[in-house]
Length: 126
Image (cartoon, rainbow, N blue to C red; front, side):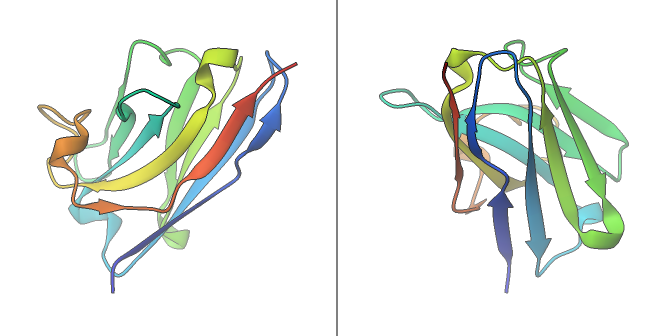
């Protein structure tokens, strides 16, 4: 049974850092991309990063490029999102997702996703 479980969210001050984890089970990471999405109150869900192990590729949205880093621990079937220099506008619920496009094309579109984690809240506030 496929499962994606996020953890690591919380409250952090502007300029601070958090590392989110996405523990995957029920499938092999090598066969798919794993993406991170976020949804702020009143806004649409947006793709912010994606990693493809099979293609050795990572993608980032412009809003997080240079501040966030996606990585994997294949032995643990876990994908991480290291978030640095956090801003108040990064406040959102963060979701990981299995990306059937393997991080190409419209990898950032939530409409391409069938399998989601439950989400973890990130709040950036002074």
